[in-house]
Image (tube, rainbow, N blue to C red):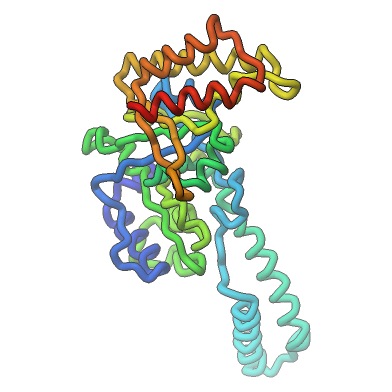
Length: 348
């Protein structure tokens, strides 16, 4: 039975829900039947536009993520727990040797030292296990106005935030079963509690993987993250695109999304021209498929971002008028043109 079949097992899903919920002390944690509107922050690149037009998203091996604890498996709560396990092993062995009146091959201290080192090595190997198990993830958020995420994941406000409604998928579509809310906690889930002797779970390996892939440190809870999780154990690529069966309902462009359309010593004319052609291609697709457009703007007197609506066709006309024949402009004119656009959307 493969991962897709396991995900369809209601008992398995309930078990993982319970394990994660217990770890974060939240019995209400669950895998919902319906989804909130989810948003994907991303850079404005050829691959991201191709994904949108082909109804795909790029999934990434979890080992590529910026948080070293993301996807890390933990077998012990602390070094003290490792030492305690070693001491229990020593006591068990000593009892056996004493019953047979046989001398132990090494001292208490030496055995515990060797055992500690061995357990530490095993624990370290487990830490990055999801990386080479072929766990691939695409990240979403219930927020489309996060200052931090626009900065970190949308290319310093030069990218975009793509909105999806996965409730549009048929109720029986197996792709629904790959979407989960993330759980944030002070402590990770300790995986030895799930093994082949666990009578509650028929698929302990898959439970290990899913519990780990859906858990992050509390520092990240501002992301309000949901994840699309897949397992491709033989996949050698670090990232690739998969079909998700849902077109975007809206695309919000970053405050500085026009920066790549201007040139200076760092951004040459040919690259800028390619980016202009790319935005026109995307906007044409949005017009043809009735996908809403907006631009992230700043609130007045607050550290707050606000998506401001604009017709995709109007934005396309603006770009075509200001960058005729995909011809970029010098960067010294960037702020002039940006203000012109912001004034236009503020009047909508």
